[in-house]
Length: 419
Image 1 (cartoon, rainbow, N blue to C red):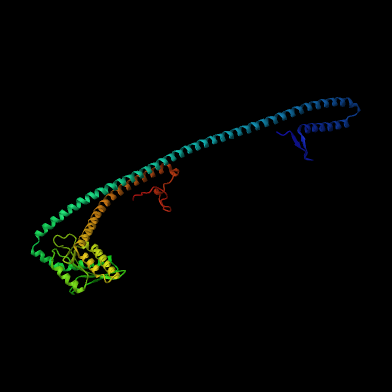
Image 2: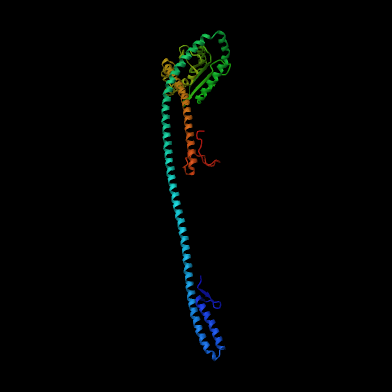
């Protein structure tokens, strides 16, 4: 409530009490002057009385002015107190709201920290479980490998012995059943089968010894099947003459024919590769000046003979006059000692190959079984991770092997690793 007014003439701020008293005084003075002009001398008494009345009125106006000023001051004090009380109440409300917000934020921060601690603990537990599972899988694989190797060796030995007995029994039974008509039928097919064996022998020699000259004997020409000109860094070392036979029965006439072909071809060594070996021969043997072997032993025998021909060529190059040494070496190559050495080496190599095939088959079966088990474990881990991710949301730290590749439509999520 204002306790002053503005003068409309000079725009000066004048206290309300002073303005009221001044206006009253001006009005009374104007009235007094007017009355004084009208009054005559005989009215002086009345004028004095009027003066007294005016003095009383002035006193009354001063009293009223004091009352007005007191009321004005009280109204101003009451308004200020009300405004202050309202401001204090508003400040108190805002302070209580801020305190409530601070308390709520502190509570949320505490909850977030507790949740983070729980998630970190769960992550550590998952990592520890994963490492433990990995270690367990490695240990299990090592144990299985050792068990598989031991079992495979034992089974291979037993299986090989059983196969040998079974094969001997089958040969014996088949020999008894064969009659002349079956022999005649086999004789008709032997030409085609022999040509197939000849082509196979030629291809194997070309692939194994690309530096040698492998020449097949033309069809219809008398002679063996394949001529192998052995070559090394010292040039031509000699000739190997190959004869292939795909018959069920051995014939001694093959040796005589090959020796004649060897003489006509001027070959150093003759070899008969046959499906039917002479009686008492297993895999490879030196029979009447000619090497005899089965198809599986052909390449190992060729390696041995090439080495000896290369050694002979080296001896001839060093000293052409040392023909006696070359003859002795040739005699050694054609002798029984070298035959036993080559036979034993080829037999051991074939036995090792059969054992290796048996071990590889058993190991493949067991590895496939372990692979299926590991895939099942990986699927279970992926399901566990997906469930935890659905519960924790973005707070769960991503595990790279269990996430989809970047750029897929589905976004990050657990993968079925063992798909």
